[in-house]
Length: 152
Image (cartoon, rainbow, N blue to C red; front, side, top):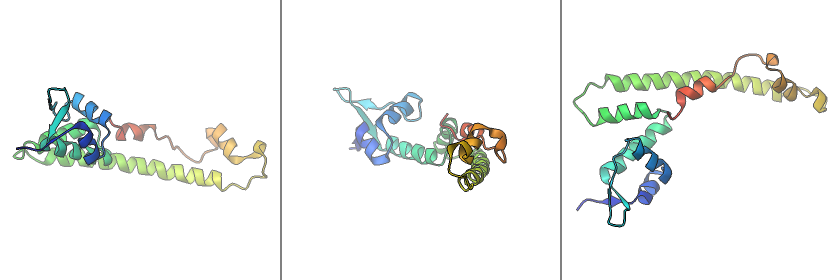
């Protein structure tokens, strides 16, 4: 007899929220499970392992399209592994870009936070810099790196 899990058990065992499990199911990332007569989802061990794989990949910042491709590769062990390395290298490059931007952001925040202000809001370096981006020492827009690391 195979072990079956409710969606709540899947959530507790993997740390993935129930709503997220339903979303992954709707995206086809985990198969639609069988249901009890009462309509409760019943997942098997393979679905649990797939969800754990998915969660770990999300923790590493992979987007859902890349995860789907990696899962497809995992299901076909005789396939060439090169695409998996390509996906991992792309993710590494995205993380490197984000780290560069975060380092610039940290430098700017440190410069703002360590300014020697006279103690009045009218002369507060933090407020001045936030009000005029030209006072910053460089670009620190995270929007591009968020797209790279998003859950799309």
